[in-house]
Length: 324
Image (tube, rainbow, N blue to C red; front, side, top):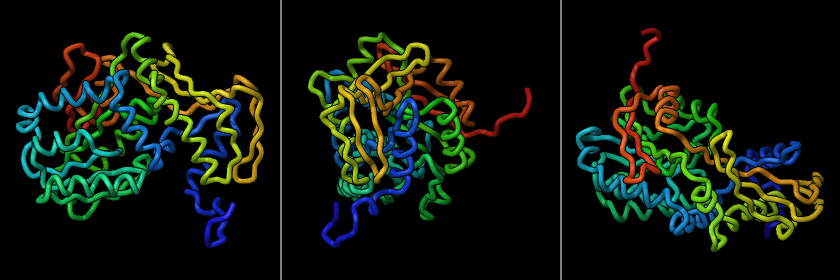
């Protein structure tokens, strides 16, 4: 397949995307990292998901942020740069920016088009605020703009995105955030809690099929960017609760035997086999605090919704003692 300038489409792909897809499809349990959901269409579909009646995290976290504003003002202080990891469309961000009136806002997101569009919208909403977007995968080192180098920093990591990572990777990311933001920085993070299975599964398998479209869009992206021949209609979205690992898993299940190519390499799947595309870990109260401490963040305050189903924690990057 060729582009208009006769350059093969496959050469235009993100090399990390190509590497992850080819490696993941070669596994016995096929798997592709969830961060590759977020091309422009995937980002737009996710924003649709956040408005679904079954998807409680966005409503719960938004309500908490609106409630805790007076406490945040005192806890965070003046002149901070807000650094948001995985900003998306920044739906919750205006609540925080209106509340603490920061000196700068640095949104970080892997989807460049979506990032720039959202940053432009926020610049219009906050004309006096420097908005400094950074297109990056925050699972790798992120250089922050020089303009915020000397400012105290507040990391913002909403949506329980930390739950998409295996615990080892989550701890590694939290330590990296600590290094990027610096000693004394603060982190405001959303954490989803363990709850009944029916509520959890419904949040990731909505009746309107929006989450299914979001999951299947990953295959469309593979076909478009990696010259794939994946028969998308041969796959179905599946969400399941893994109680032992305390996580929701999303899979793409082959509904029949299929064969396809990606970047010129051949793959085959039997009916019933799956591609594991996402995890969403859920944490208990002590689990979340221990996770933050393992990443070098000391929890300072915690706010939970009325039903305790979702919590927001403010933590500080403090020197970690080597002994009691």
